[in-house]
Image (cartoon, rainbow, N blue to C red; front, side, top):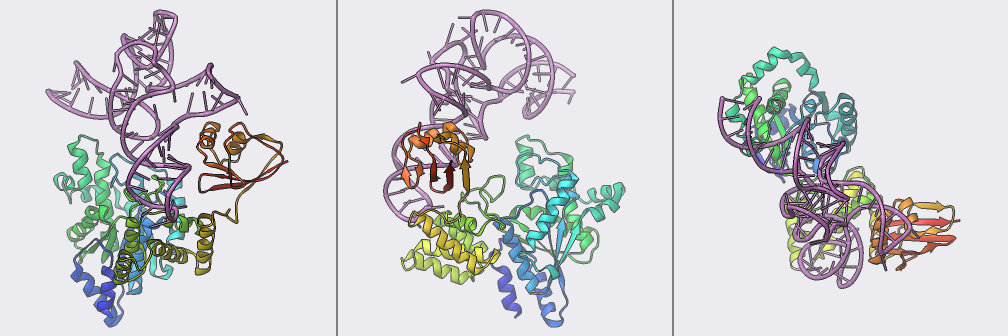
Length: 399
RNA sequence: GGUGAGUUACUCAAGUGGCCAACGAGGGCAGACUGUAAAUCUGCUGACUAUGUCUUCGAAAGUUCGAAUCUUUCACUCACCA
């Protein structure tokens, strides 16, 4: 049992520091049921969760199955500073109201994956507001600038003469201090968080907590473009609250190469099964598209259910395989016959009449499945299905 | 505080008085080919019922028939010195 748990825990992780400690915790849990804690922090900066976040959440869920209590630390205090991780520029500081609102959304969505009964939500402002100025200064004495500059992005910015604000130096310290306060056994984060996670270990020792947390880093999930980290600001994400059809379609649009990455990090298949599948695809037994479909179905099923996943697949095949029109498309009414470009802009299918003209010229616009070529065209009374490119549709009624 | 360099579209980056709605690259969008994959090829990539007009090159003011380009002030970024 313990071995099985440990194997499951190791799946897909990037690095584990102090694996022996985790082994001890799991063994103890299966011997006498003593729970242990695993901490994860998040910045309530962006509200909606995407698949990138679920890499962490899935791992936490695994731990919950094996006796862990998740400490979900909402960095409401730290968010007022802004973690510089992965950003080449200083982050914007956020206001309080937005933080609270985002935290709420985050929790709601996190519980789509996490077991609510085995999760404690904690706002780190509760202890930081008590810490006070002297406590804060005491905290800063635990570390020095040279060590701080060891952190990749600080080093990079320091060398290229970009600004690093003092408050950014505080961020890793504060995140580490969370671990002191919570006496966490394990902390989980992305590979880009490694420095901050180790800080927790360091501080737990300095403050004589009596344990040093194990650290697990998870790989960063690439976005739909396959290059940059999945993030909302780059618009290369799959949100977990998006429509089943959208999730399905977005998964199908990733490259084959990236699909394996997603399989590895997101699928619940055993790693051996993934490898088997990969071999089958390579020697032609399984069509890569079939493999991608399965992944898409698995993911939609996770956030919705099997039935909706199947509907999403049917819908997708209908539109893109047989070139039919989707079953649910937005309808718009137009009061009088008018210029086609103008209508397309009005119903938000096109951003500007200029763009509409260009698209018509390139044959990207269809009316009732027929390509149109006349950019001066006036849409007479009647009903039409307009299509822009491959994926934008609208039903238009002209009175 | 002093001196110097810089700020151009989503990003990088040319342009240094009219030929500039602004070279090029990346990205994005679209078309062909496909599996809405990748790769490849092609076109497009400020707005406007449009062979023309309008607004854009950090901000404002000015010189000029004419400014992204010259002058002044301001803001910001960077380098060197203190």
